[in-house]
Length: 166
Image (cartoon, rainbow, N blue to C red; front, side):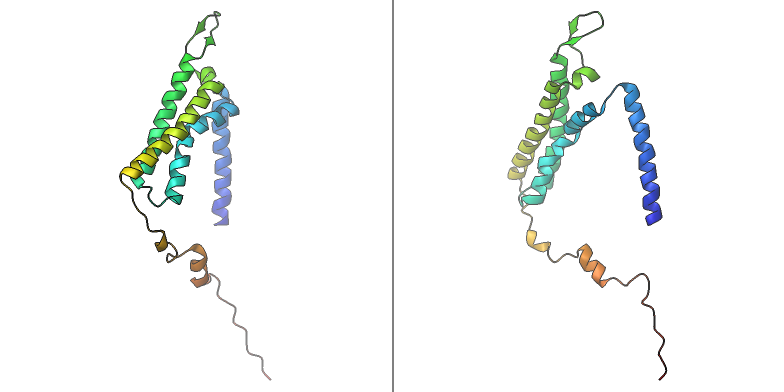
């Protein structure tokens, strides 16, 4: 298992280097990636929190909140970016969606806010329309890692000590 984890660390390092090189050649910086990440995964924050902490959160509500929030975030992000002023090479101010306009603070803020707010609204409203009413009392009876670890047979047997002669 240690060997597999070490190999996967090396694979992840090489893969990250390849992705970083591709993004660098495209002119996309790390700040842009961090801002865009909020648009891509920010819509899952509130529905997944509701799924973990609220008994009435339904699976349909959580999934719909995640997907709906993502769609709303992408629409808001690109729409606001298209309305931002961008000066092209000729010095004209035009409305265009590109890496530069998508990386400005206004479009990123609009996308991130839509990701959080729309996903929360959808998850809450759909879960209220059809609550799942999960019974949290069933969880304490389920096996956990620590309880399985205590009952598992050890991988290496305990060494048998030879009896000493009197």
